Image (tube, rainbow, N blue to C red):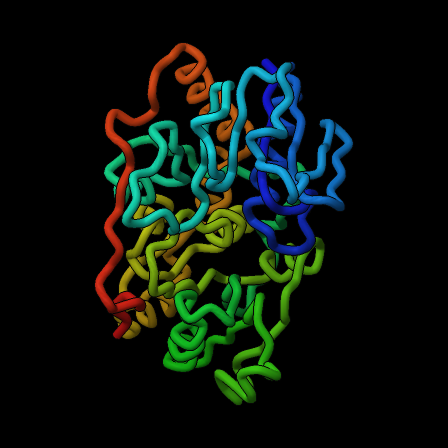
Length: 329
């Protein structure tokens, strides 16, 4: 099968770039399975296992699809889809697309993500764990961590910090934010129990995750998936977060605790030893890997190529009320 993966971003990804990483690993797995993959992505991209073409921003994307492909996998919304003569699927990676009917061949990234759009069409994100530094599950762990873009209010880094400060003596390392921000001024906390490590990636991030007792993740929005969760689990870190979005799908009682009440999270954190580092690692390794993801996408591809629609009705979600941040006590 010849598949073109389309995304308005750069591959490979620098540091974070969740969507770029997911489509990179997806393409690599498809190639391993004998399929022909090419990418249509932003200028400056490169890839050793697939052809790369740069998006021409002066032309409609649907006019840049070559005639020799069997299926197009879009990873963002594109206009003029009715003019595309090739079978296609679209993966929605975020929480956009409200108040409009979405295309029938839409794929979401978690069960909850799909259900919020009245759909059951989803594929969980997977990562190539061979591309990650192997965890040392016997390593001494002395702190907790937050992982995400701390500048986003929905990620609730303040909640993570206040939670740690409410424990007896636990420490927190914030990965994805800095204590001093030129736009926001001196922010978050002056506590010596909290340290900031900025936007980290590669070996530095893996080392920090491997030394952590657990992920503090009290998000205040419906997380579509959350690579921070599966990466943390891979390094043996249980997850302490809010019960929103995909978190209940990813975090069962064996690998973490969910509540939107700070006091309850504090109690669970202080009893972190009840969670098995090995169980956390094995869940991510076995369930959230790139091969499993690629096989699930191949099933969706085959449905579309056989003329079936991935959704009986057009996915749709009405915009939420004025309240933008979900409850956190």
